[in-house]
Structures are given as structure tokens and as C-alpha cells.
Length: 113
Image 1 (cartoon, rainbow, N blue to C red):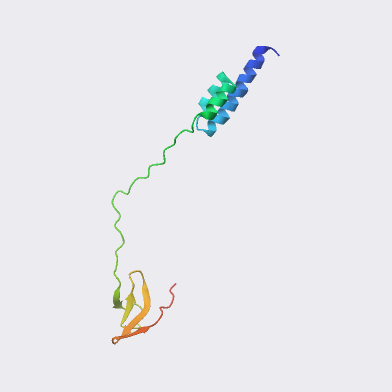
Image 2: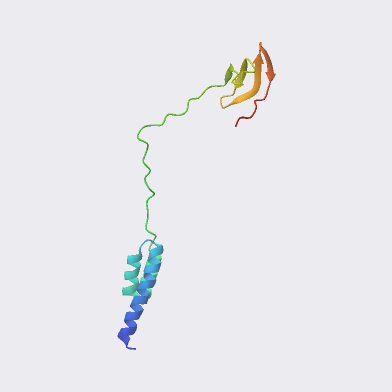
């Protein structure tokens, strides 16, 4: 083989290797060009170039503000089960504490669903 043939084969091989290294950095074309024209030095250069910055995707804000859910404060309220006059609402859910005729008691709610 002649020197010219070996040089062309070497340039192509280094170009392909440069493209592989460059692809890992988001720069396959730059890696291929550096490998093809500079050989081993091109591979070193593309290996030292930092990865291409890709900004995070932009998430569009809703067209209108979403109001927070209503907050019902903790309080004695009519018993939703109907078994007692009142049941304690703790601000998040119904408790087992009940009142009938001013007398407090405990009556666990039956699981729903």
C-alpha cells in the first residue's frame, strides 16, 4: 500500500473515532472533523471539549392561576354518618370523636370504599 492510501484510511478511521467521541459530547460533526484533519491530536481535543449545554425544557405556566383548595378549619360539625349530633373535623378529615346532647364520646367511622 502506498503512503497516500494509508493516510486516507487513517484519516477516515480517526474521523470515525472522533465522531464517536464527539457524539458523547453532543458534537459529532466537530469530533469527526477534528479526528479526520488532526488524527490523534483531534481525538485529544474533542475529548477535552466540554459537553454541549442543553437547557432544560421550558414548561409553560397555566393560562390562569389555579386557586388552592378551600381550607375548612378544625371544628365540631354535623356528623356525616348521621349516627351522632356532631363529629370532630380536624381540618383534614373526620375523627372518631363525637358529641350527643353535650356528652362527648368515641365512635370510629367505618371505612368507605
